[in-house]
Amino acid sequence: MAVGNEKYSNISCAGGFITQNVYSSSLGQQKGKRTALNISRRDPTNWGAKTNRGIRMHGAWYVTDTMIKHSHGCVCCNQAVHEALIDIIKGGSFLFSYFGEDSIEV
Image (cartoon, rainbow, N blue to C red; front, top):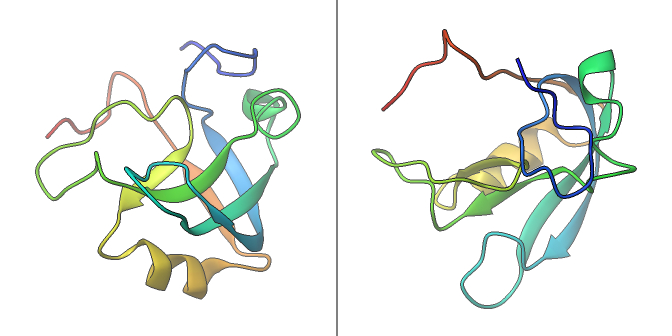
């Protein structure tokens, strides 16, 4: 499995993360800003997630109930639920991200 620690790799960073603070971001937005969540790495598979890549969690227009397009590595979710989800898990929750041959494809 490829590991997304290198700058500009656009590969998802898999493994465990701890959620941190909430901030306003334009990531994944077609216009304007919305809530996003900083996350810190917890596994050797994602050592460069924050320092090299700036990986975080945010809502994205390209994630729907039936479609997920490429996010350049961030943990993304549907904009209809992302703010409520971020509010629930912010401030120290464990977040696990996985991709690979056994991943579910929609």
